[in-house]
Image (cartoon, rainbow, N blue to C red; front, top):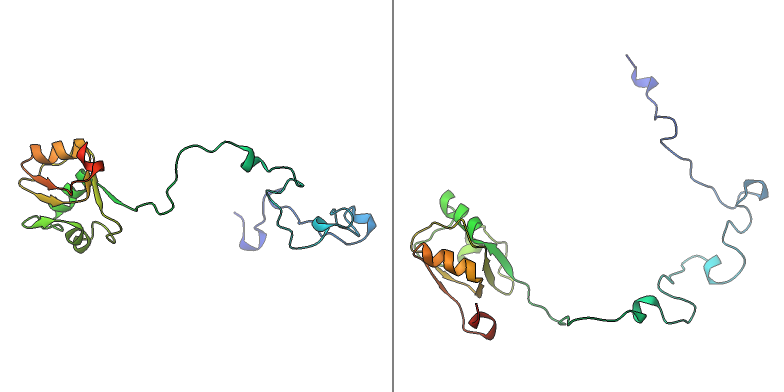
Amino acid sequence: MTRLNELRDNPGASKKRVRVGRGIGSGVGKTGGRGQKGQTSRSGVAINGFEGGQMPLHMRMPKRGFNPHNPKKWNQLRIDRIQAYIDSGKLDVKGVVDADALVNAGVIRRKLDGVRLIGSSGFTAKKVSFKVDYATKGALAAIEAAGGKVDMPKTEETADA
């Protein structure tokens, strides 16, 4: 049995750090492996993407698609997760289930830009009325099959759903 004062790392488990600038015999003395003069021999160098005046790789690569400057942040909720909150009694379904009701029940932390219902199975609650910003076709079908209804604002995005 080993004693506490005999505990050691396995051989080769830890490596001593290189102490640069400690004489010519060390192999990394004087300039410490930084070469001579210039920007990179000094501290505080930040030229990660710089290629010496040549057009950097990230600027040479083609750009694809469109990234909006102010994208919407949605609360995406699976309908089976909502069902779990209904079954546990945390979510009251007597009124309309909207963003405020979901925050009060602890299903979502904050409203963000709206709520989107996703998923296509696992929802069995009867006569639940939702007021959300978006719902997938599968989520709509599952909720309506259980006898509930979904109220969404009419927009181009939800018109085809």
